[in-house]
Length: 147
Image (cartoon, rainbow, N blue to C red; front, side, top):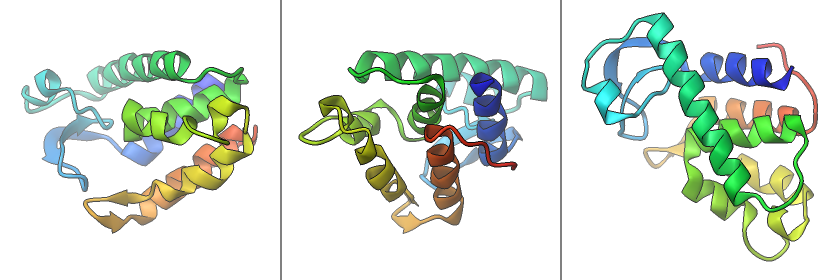
């Protein structure tokens, strides 16, 4: 079940933070990577509320993937790009998939070579982002990495 893998993986990489904090990218964040200013402004969030917010935001990211990607995706490929979009945003998804010899041109292999480049936050390469991209590529290829 790729949706369960997606949820477990994103929870693993984001971690749960009950109080608002500034992430490595300089963005105010809370819960499992939630950057919604209305949610962050509350200052604290329960694990249950954070999970519900994460599911809502993953559904939003999934819709963004469906809107931006013009080629057919398998469920596991959709899960991989949903995680990427949740983490990096729809603008970076467009950069990943649009252009000559990219995914929207039918070049599925371009994801394998370009996705790992998204490993910086706050101007520095982050080990956590490198591990996340490895996990997302495993999802993309239909493999499961035990986290």
